[in-house]
Length: 471
Image (cartoon, rainbow, N blue to C red; front, side, top):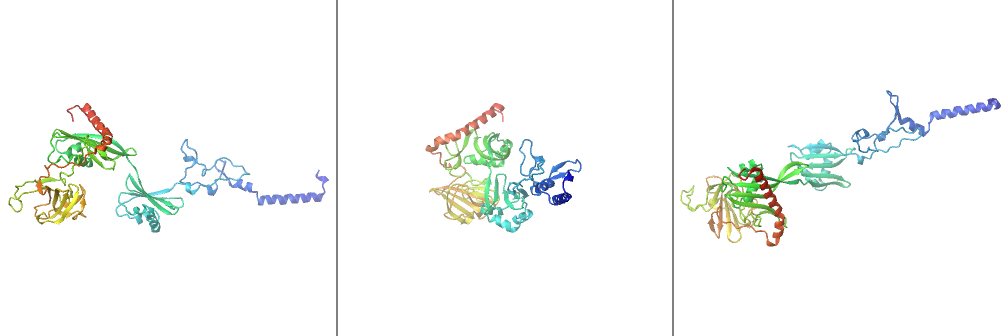
């Protein structure tokens, strides 16, 4: 058939073919190029597999198909596809956005001597960035207050940009500072533990402290128990062998783990055969106090003793003075305590005088209403802000135990006077604090009945399990 074409035509056709083939070898089409670079050959198996474009290589910290948990949907953005690609279609996978990648955290436990600048430096950030953080909005400035034992953490993105700083004060409170568009913003984040009721009981053979420890109460709960009933009971002199106590209190849990104890919810104390029940009640104003089931306050208008210490010299109007060796009335009660022990105001009032008072040494006198005054003498130092005319609250520190004035050793001399006449502070009848108002009694009963029931039920279960005479 070729003989039918002229020879010069055949030559021209051959030349065209050679030129066309050469151009294809030198410049392949786009689909051919895409298919060529997207396939790699495994030299061991001889099989081919698609190659991930360089821009789509997943971050080492991102989950991949191999690390996807069983049953979970596989990520789509950064996973290398094993489906063969058509040699005529280009591979087109979008790279993961930096915003979707997890932050990289660096955590440091704060040790004595650490500073905020040294911690920023350890994390790889300079002082200029530190100042930007602490000068941020909200609570950001509180990052400057660091304490040993706390934990600070820095979070940065894949580009090394600081995005978040957290300062864990304790398990319940953290300072969280986030990078916003216009700077850093800090806030205090708190967690509320779960409160679960717990019950303990004990019998006193020696001291309340030893009995409470044997019952499983910590020191804080023991002091709180003594404070609840301490208005009428002197736990140094009034306790008798065989006295009993029962306590319903809170145990605090976080993430299923017990982390602390909370408030005493209800308690019962039997002293010399007389039983007293205390129920916690929060009034409409948010003030919490302990009351008897009929609404009477267990708190008195005055503390029985302004300090937790032993009596070194009782009230005695016929006492011989230890320094002057003459009979001189001892119009107060002396409490021996280490120097520096805080002294509490026995009740609400206004300071009548504060300063040096002859043989009393450094002394504070408080006027309570029209007819009652209390005196606190021989202080090492008077409390900050305690001066004539200052109003004080019951339990507020007015000074510290010392040995100023005419004394033989450090102690507190405490006087209680009614209409100017000295009274024995350990035996005088103290006025009660205000009871539950009649208008609030229905609400009080509703709130405290469950506590009383829980206390009685816990006590009943104990008696059934141990027997009425067992402890």
